[in-house]
Amino acid sequence: MKLLIRILITSGLVLLIAHFMTSVDVADFTTALIVAVVLGLLNLFVKPILVILTLPATILTLGLFLFVINAVIILLCSRLVDGFRINSFWTALIFSIILSVCQSIAYKIIGDDK
Image (cartoon, rainbow, N blue to C red; front, top):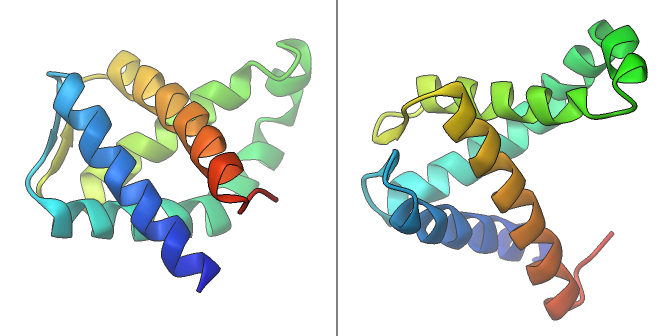
């Protein structure tokens, strides 16, 4: 049940952020659900590999390179999901930061934080 709630919150946030950011396009709520699931899967399987491969850069930047990894995950998701489009790397970076902050706040409000 927690997983379903987290997916619904993430998809709602994706729609909300896309509404305010003109360079992010989401076709409909179904696409936002698919984006939430794909982001979850990419964060589960691809992100740990990227973190390990870029560990020296992450250490040199004191962890700030993790923002770049999040943006790459968002861009990869936009390539995989039809109906979800992000124009540039910088847009993906801003989108990932806003999404992370909003998810943290939403999960704290509903009491579903890790």
